[in-house]
Length: 223
Image 1 (cartoon, rainbow, N blue to C red):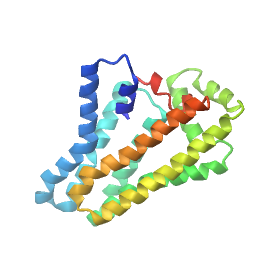
Image 2 (tube, one colour):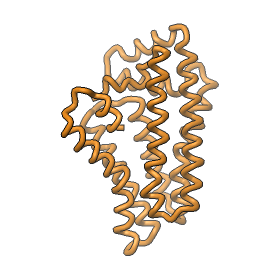
Image 3 (spheres, helix red, strand yellow):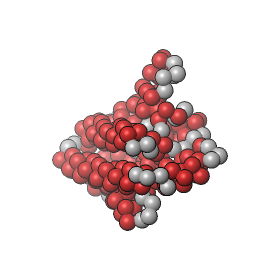
Image 4 (cartoon, helix red, strand yellow):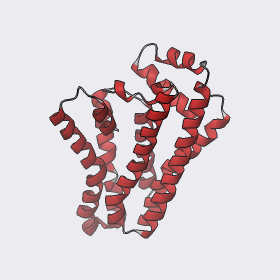
């Protein structure tokens, strides 16, 4: 999530931006694979797989502690990582651990779709909570925005697309986790998962801006 923030911030120092992006990519993409490869021979597939889930979690905790700011994307990413770590900690056969971890995003996708039955969908509540955390008038601004013509339809469309997208992501990752060797999945799976997440994020920014609801994922104001 830091990558999208920094790339959207035209005031960021290029060298510092490159270093921070490299650190995030290493923590989320490369570190799980390296941890697994380093521990698998001595501790076995299951323990090595559990340990490989720690680098992304530690990086996300560090990032939130440093920025001390919360947004809708941070909530979704960190919640997903925490649930994945919890699912992994239950143990079991390695393939089951991987599939169980991949199912987390699908569960979130189903929650997005189920929230369409509510007066205000889940993505609205996430964005409202983040806005209230980041600005004193954030919650009031979101409630006022909800009354504007077309805003309700915009939030519902975004919740529907996120729900469908996360379920597609889950289906792809579960299939690959089952047929690929563990090391290949750990190396390539994050590119697929974060790639789909990134497409959903970019679509949300475009769609929100087009329909005057950019505050849902306002990358221009991220630190």
